Amino acid sequence: MAGVFLATLYEYSPLFYISVVSLCFVVTAAMVLGWFGFDVPVILRSYDEQEPSLPAAEKQMVQVTNPFALELGSGSASVIDGVLVRPCCLESCVLSCFWGCEVSTLQGVLHAHQHGMMLSTHQHFQEALNLHYYYCQKFHISSEDRAERHTQIPADQGITDFGPLPRQRYPLVAVLTLEEAQDRHLNDIVASVIVIHVPDDKYKLSARILFQYLLTSQGSMYELKPLFMSADSGGMSGSADPGHTSTPSDTECEDQIPMMEEEEEGWSEGTQGRDCVVCQNAAVNRVLLPCRHACMCDSCVSFFQHCPICRAFVQESFALTQSTDFVDN
Image (cartoon, rainbow, N blue to C red; front, top):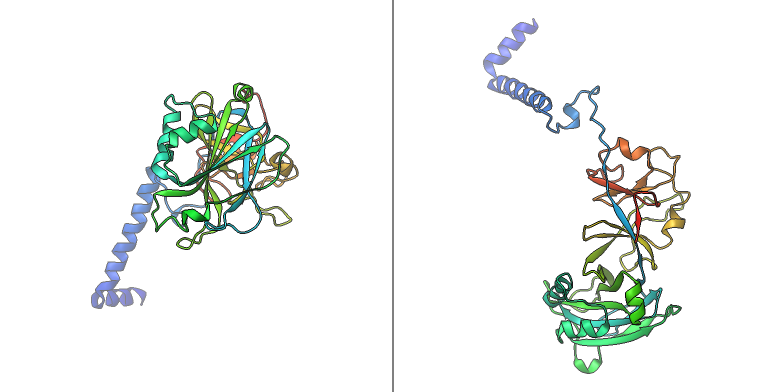
């Protein structure tokens, strides 16, 4: 009876054999792709099939001391009313606030530092930018000073916004440099460049730090990037506040690669007691790259090719705590 029904359906419905042929094609294609090692959708895989577990490569890190930190202060911020910033330095330093700095000029200056033009003082930056900004304001910061500083474009300049998007100028570029020549000889990092967005009438996105760069005495430049941790039992998010940067501390950076991973404030204390998201037993000690999630212990990281938080492919990882792989500068 079933055979008669199928034969009748086949005879009167061409969609039947079209569907059968399509189904056979999909199953065959999935099998062929799986044999040749292509990433087949999970729904088409066998439950007995397991991906080979290859440990992520170890990223070699170098520990350096970052003498600079800056965060946005309390209160509202705007181009007209100005913005509060709170610098925090290990040594006496100079805070230079360049309003309306041209994007191309700043990028050119940072590029020049990497090709022989040393930028380590307020005068160096002022001369290199060559008045390609609207206004500059300078503050002297001692090592114990944690007070907020208010920076603002003078009202008589009549600047209320920086034009429509895409913009040719950064609203605010804050530069921290060491004040004493002796400190510049003792520290590898001699300047910190922080690009800050300040809202105005044409672009009301809240004030936040966009980019942070560290310049070294050897002519290198590193970009600070935040690390991310899953929320703990108290509900505190591990993602970085867009207006916040870490306090000065020992920071681990990738050897011979122009990027630096930023530690959040109190990172060493905050990680203690935070358990691995996989085994829920050992402490978190591994940062996965390129997603920068700090979520696994040393043992579990070797069993995963994808981040358990965002499912991004793990190319490399590095440890938060010091080990014999780290070289102390």
